[in-house]
Figure 1 (cartoon, one colour):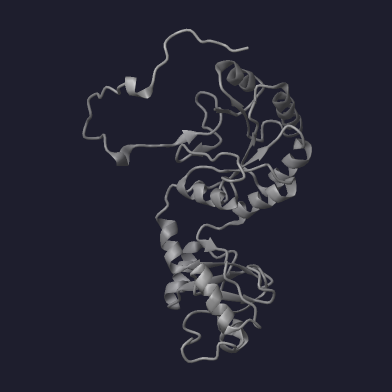
Figure 2: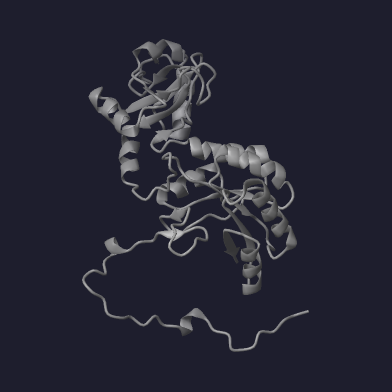
Length: 312
């Protein structure tokens, strides 16, 4: 049955923001966009404060791991979509948490038995000329060497030559470790006149690459949303069905906040989900709920213990 709301309807064009007095202090540099993500008591600090008032929709077409990094870089928070298996969602959350700002995972990785022609084809597809060589061709395989545009000459060299014959071998590479900070990585790059520094773990497997240009980009993002361990912050969507399995995996992966994702959040199912989380984790876990479209729905979820409520 349709419901009619009393009163006149209005559009945005009928309203005007009446300007007031502006002092010399009213400049963009003095504006703070910091926004609490979750409820907090008067006199206390919010557990999560966004540096820009922006979160992403919990949708497969919007919130993957790359959006998680991109939004945290700018100071907001992404919520990884939950319309996938708990294991794959947890893997995405872990990917964001493990992503070290300024350390790039290679998308142009080679194996020693690939040919120069394949190298040129890969460069054409990705636009990247710095290509690590690993034992299995994956971004985290054992590092065997590296190929840059200075290692081969397409106009003169044999296009069927194997990567192993013209790559810079591992023993000649300058590398950093997982403990190497970005500042130290930048010093190594400059001291050795490098354009890129491979980062390896204790087993000499590739973690990522620090590029000279990316370090400068990192310094130009002062609003990055970081946790206490200087890792990007990221949220994750959950549902009211498999939360008993999904929530532990997401928390173990490092999710900073959870949000129940539903087109209709004004339901007892959301209360049961919040109750389970509180019973098993207390208030240590930040969990939001939604979506709702009116005050009654908001108040219901707030009274159920939601830390924040999605409206819309």
